[in-house]
Amino acid sequence: MTVPLIPITDMAERHPGLTPELAGCYLQAARVCLDRHHTPPVKFMVRDGAVGDFVAIMAWDASDERCRNAWANEIDATEAGAYAIALAAVELADGFVAVRRAETGTGADYYIAPSDDPGEDLECCIRFEVSGTDRGAASEVAQRLRDKLNQAAAGASNLPAMAGVVGFRAQLVMLQVLDTI
Image (cartoon, rainbow, N blue to C red; front, side, top):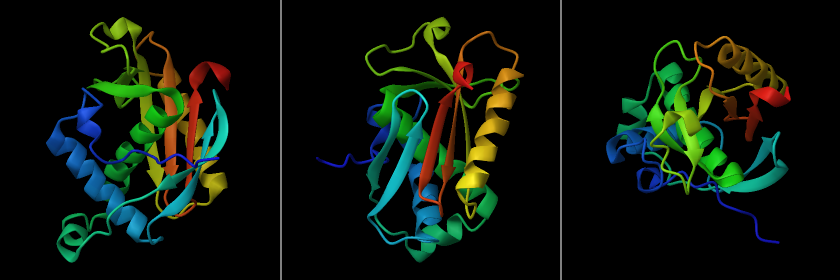
């Protein structure tokens, strides 16, 4: 059985809601966060409430000193790196891609849609709330997922919602649709 690769590179080519520059920034941040704890490649557990659990490979080029210096703020790096990995994981697991950044107050970070539907009508999209934790264990990732689902539920939008949380040290991505909690 082939272990799939979490597709964190060239995301702008597949995610119409990401520019090449933004996807590149997210990738840089993810590399810095991954380098804090791991040497590539490593296995990550993806726990998806819709499709179940599976192991995937996380591969990246190690960051250099300039990149580490640019992303020296741990909070910013963890947030931006989590965008890269959560969006790549939801693409791998569920076939969804980012189509647009969500507005403030919606309880989400991005609108996502099936990769075969460009998401031109936001009414066909799902709100996607993302978070990450640099050092937390699996229990912290699970608690953060519950918090993010609650945040999405409180958002000013009637669109369905999903949350994704990345545990960099824990080698874990958790994805959950709001309706299934």
